[in-house]
Length: 115
Image (cartoon, rainbow, N blue to C red):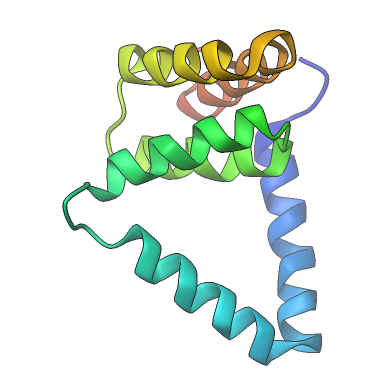
């Protein structure tokens, strides 16, 4: 693994905190949107985080992968559930998504200590 997802998410959280200080209204709006989008409804929060991870994989966003894998672990995602999400992301995104699916698995293994 070339990068640590624990380090990446920690560093990004710090920098996002700096952004929050500089443009608080924008970040309040972003946080409100995220909170509303993630509320349990017809889809559970866990399902919505799975969708977010798949989008992060297909969008090739390492920060998104780190934050959404971490959130999914807190919501009790199993390795099999994660693998099925990654399968859908690979199916929809082809080769580039396969590379980032491997990144998501690395993040899962790092955060769960199963490396």
